[in-house]
Image (cartoon, one colour):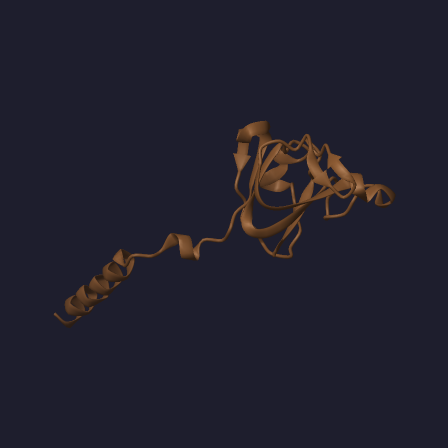
Length: 134
């Protein structure tokens, strides 16, 4: 009888914990949206933003490597996109053409984004990115 009562208490406790409301928005990590076509079309993926950590477009993100055409950067962040893995530029002498920094917002086309020296076509160039809070 004691074993049945203990089991009932354990099940009741487990069910009440599982039924407790959880605010998923508060517990969720911010995400960045990366799409393979302009206007947020094509394949879109929303990986979590890991502050100050380089994300290479490999593994589950391989589909996006050198295919990103539109981006949504989460509010409160700045993200730098690179044309090489490891969050480095392929040609340090021309880094103004090999990387672009975007602040929180929607970028429906990467064909003309503001680069270091003016408008830059960064369409289908991204191989890695890093984000930081503002």
